[in-house]
Image (cartoon, rainbow over all chains, first blue to last red; front, side):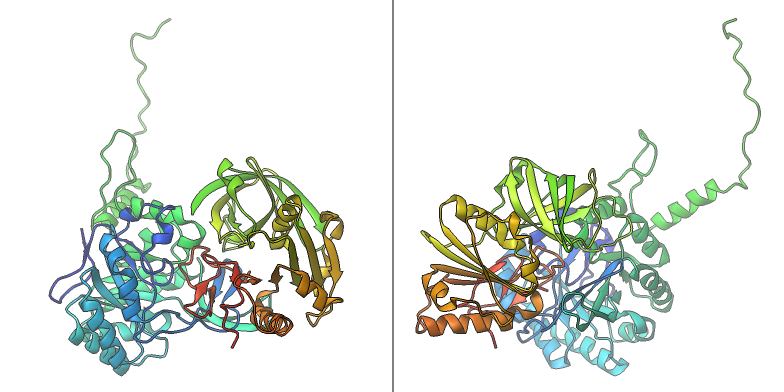
Length: 318
Length: 248
């Protein structure tokens, strides 16, 4: 059991430290129910939700990059009321907690969204998506608005390049946890149309940057940090945990190798044997990083090796 | 949607910008219908390039065998094992009893319509294929000889446009992603003028074939603005009734 948020009326507790990030799995991950065992995950974060409906962006929306992709959807969604109406029953049947991702547009809209979600018993928490140009004052206002409108735990997803700057402010404003970080923005030329297109960048190239940000933020705040960005292997996910995250969110890997998300969840959830066959399973717990550290120390060459020559048994045949 | 594996049996370069790949597949893929596609990812791709899965349109489907056609963006070779998500999209909604079908392709290979053309010919329907722009580079000798080919110009006009649009019981258009809304809108307007505004449901379809990120409808990157609610090209398409599409 992992305490994903701190403070508030009731912390969000999940069974597995691997979550699906916002924007990759739809509103309930139903599209992936046949491709991986969703019950092995810790939670599902919905696609971005706004108070009013939003339409899709014009122009190129998917631009391939070397070892990655640039995506610009425009955060289309039918508005919070319609989303709740369409997905309330499905969320109630979800095998794992549902975290509703609310786009932090204005404090008024955030408060209205949070109030609607607060009345939906199948939502376990709210995640606020902070835009890249947000200042401390904006951050404080939207978090406060959300906290005033709901008793649900409030997570805050910070932009990558100013996560360290904003994280203490998010903690002070009452965030239950911070997600580090949202995918960074970029610009690339669409090979189909020849146009330049802006959007968010996904891919394993994000891992190193996100990992650094997680390490920095984890030292700067006392609330839980959830790592997100470019995680593609169990080792990536473990690196985030070792850097100070209590859990991780998987993004575009779900599109390219959905089964690998389950592999990572099983690995970090203690469902994958990490010791020799016949030994006890190495159960995951928050101290897993310590276990790994001890094992690595054990493997270091300074440990005296037993180099005595083997004595031949006495009863060897002639 | 389910994930299976396929093995690349043969790779043929049929044109400078087009290749066909023979796949040994799971038997379930024999259920693929025209308009549906595979979302493929080579398993030995450890360099994450291409990063996203590629959308492969089948041009022939048999028992445990599928032939797909795609641009040679990547080099594939026999023996490679491919992870395949299927099906992406819905079957093309061919009107019941349609005997005269007009296919219009502009500036893109007609690959998503080839399987349909074969099936229509096998069902003894009459098929006319209008090709214009870069679609004219498609090797026509690979198409069934029963298909009537018309060379169009770059402005979505072609010889005998009035006659063919009047003759057709269904029109299916295909354009590249950056031109779909504009060109399908112009085509729909032309059809409306010829038919005095009375266009039956499902008569004029546009294929919203575009780069997909997830192929499952989760990412919403392929949303098409429609009356009565936006639709997702990867789940509800690729064919969308032009009567529903909001062109402005």
